[in-house]
Amino acid sequence: MNPIKVLFVCVHNSARSQMAEAFLNHFGNGRLAGESAGLEPGKLNPQVVQAMQEIGFDISGNQTRSVSDILEGGKQFDYIVTVCDEASAERCPVFPGAGKRLHWGFTDPSSLTGTEEQKLQRTREIRDEIKKRVQAWVREVV
Image (cartoon, rainbow, N blue to C red):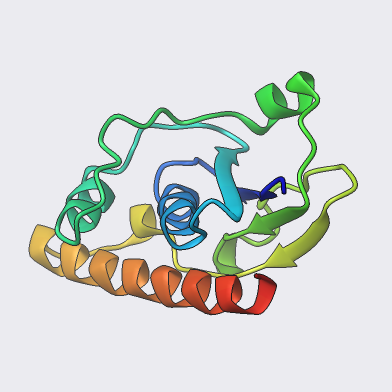
């Protein structure tokens, strides 16, 4: 049986979509296959890389990807999940295709303010929110 294919989309593909992809690929146990992309690919957020490493997920070698590259590749997905926060919802990309669209709003770690430790702590909270949402959804879908 082929895995259910899921694309996580956000603005930069540097934080939220990367975390969601890693969690889905782990908790989906081969029954779900996650990828991620962004409207304007940036660079991986180092605080997200650190927060993920703290719980045993190494995303440091991941590359950010563009939605347009995926579109040009003609890949089909069963689900397209946007993970932009409410403040950025108007900028959150729409991905055309036959897949079912879902929206899970999460705060953008790159928008956080405060000291480095405060931003890292809030990034951990966002990471945990994404992890819980992915785990719950995996239980619903498979």
